[in-house]
Amino acid sequence: MTAIDPATYDQQLEEKVVTLEERFQGLEHPPLETYPSAPLNYRMRAEFKVWQQEGRADYAMYRQGEHRQAYIIDTFPPGSTTIAELMPPLLEQINACDILRQRLFSVEFLTTLSGEAVITLLYHRPLDAIWEERANTLSQHLKTDIIGRSRKQKVVIGRDYVMEQLQVAGRTYTYQQKETGFTQPNARVNEKMLDWARQHSTDFGGDLLELYCGNGNFTAVLAQNFQRVLATEIAKISVNSATYNFEINNIDNIEIVRLSSEEITQALNEVRPFRRLRHIDLKTYQFSTVFVDPPRAGLDDDTLELLRRFDNIIYISCNPQTLHDNLVALDSSHRIEHFAAFDQFPYTHHLEAGAVLKKRLSSKVDQAE
Image (tube, rainbow, N blue to C red):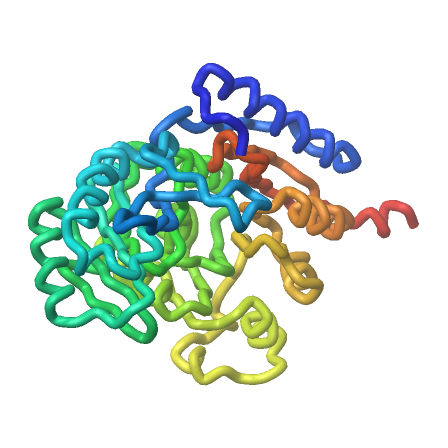
């Protein structure tokens, strides 16, 4: 991470964009669309180590590549305004109470644009009734929900989730975000990503297959552009949140199943039946589009082969290198129609990227012949 200085934000973003464009020089693509972040207070979630010394706890962080030297911090400029407001009084209350402080080794914040928050305190000791009593007092003092975690133990004071509201094209989408579930950390950039994907799929029609749908972040917004959506996700906590999110947003054209990308590929190829698909007739779907937002490792060969079937591919990537490798593999069957960079993590080398691909009228192999 470079120095967090709003005066240098535009420059550091430009350097990342140049690096991204250089990486994709060998692929034909349209001009890159760049979506910046706010220069401060952009992270809705954050995790801090707790440095214990001489009966006092302090927030601490490690620089990338350094795991032995902890740096005490008082503030965290990337954190949301809610995180900034909660950090000082939380630390004050922890240091005022030995029950809350002893063997505490980490603090996690999960917040929303509207100011909701869940604070998770992680301990190297069991949590008893006395701890729960003190945590209740802490929750009332901070007016926020508290979770205590230790080995094989979870104590919830209030709720273990927040309700985020995102604005996309004049519509409000409400999302349950669980404490341990994956969520996009930069809410304002997330809104831009959602609207970008929505805009560039308005005329696709047909049905949508989504892999790695998480809590339904993209699914809920994209559903309006398709007749039906089949979404897959392997993590049970995310499946439950996604199901809930579709209900509270009054979206009724989505089916979600707990399958990996490998398993849905097998199902579509009729390699074997899956009990979790017994209520779904895959043959009735007319898929025009597939949406993928894979882990940093990108897509495996079998999933890439699956994607070649679709007229349209929407690909969101947290790793431009694996995105590049996957798009090279798809270049014989699809061309890049839209290409974008989303600055989810200012002042770091990380840059989220997105691509919309359309099937070529004939493959490059056919053209060569």
